[in-house]
Length: 388
Image (cartoon, rainbow, N blue to C red; front, side, top):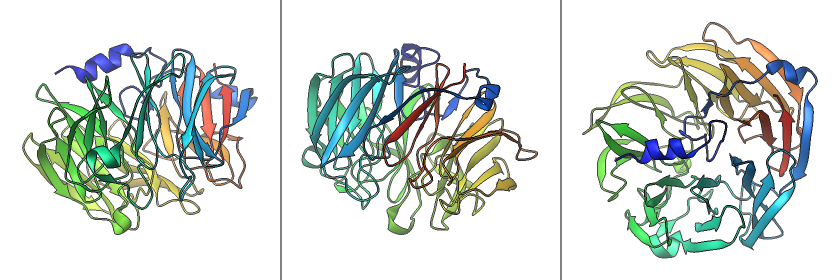
């Protein structure tokens, strides 16, 4: 099965077409000039409505979601100017924690989205014309958790996979019909992660109760590793490592490196060196960089992936991060974009630029795509800075 290879080939080198980028690692290989932040060039500032949805950028267009006046809005903007190219709205209460959580996925001329209530959509990427709509609760028995459906859609072959129900669900990519679903139950909050093992495409899913490895064609469980967290709040995605995964949760649950041999998941080590409440860590050169705890206490932290040892920590009330060009991109509780070297020997700050208001939450990871840094807050402000 070559789903992952096909997906990567379909994305332009500097596109960021879904949550955590084309390969789902949250790491960009794009070159950019940190010096440009000394006098940042503002491309645009737009208000999109409250939400936790990040941006997807493909073909010169930016896609995201917001919520205002009891409606979710799916936005398509020009990625360089912020001009609105199209918008689609539907009824959906904002709920707790700031409107829509999931990030759009752009694939082969369509945009796939899902609301906090489990309304799954496909839109024409150019025109915004709806292609189909499916209610995951009605079709798959998927009950949103306390914080709503949060995982972003994963497009694999002719499927769209969701963290919905006890162990996921999949819809037909062409028409939105159910292909398979797990037992009805509370949905997890992390996004599905596709990976290859011995030439086979599988999906890792951090559910409300465990780390599961699934066959995406059938939904059949291949392996699982129990991981219960208060409030069923497993929100950070599993991070794919050479021989398995790294998982982390907040509420003092901690983290674990888990090996996968094709049939079972087994712990390599477990500790509380990283308590990732919402942020998915990035894995760079054998080290994990993530956010321990959450704002107002969130610390940027480096952990040795082999041993689980903390290499360094930096206070600042951080909430989320990505990596690009050997640097970490994060936002502190004061609303400043902070750039730090992805260096395990010490926390070396390279730049700090005020971007968004300290009054809003900064729970959304910065995104770099085609020379533009995008920073969004939970109140709905999106800022684009030129770093070419």
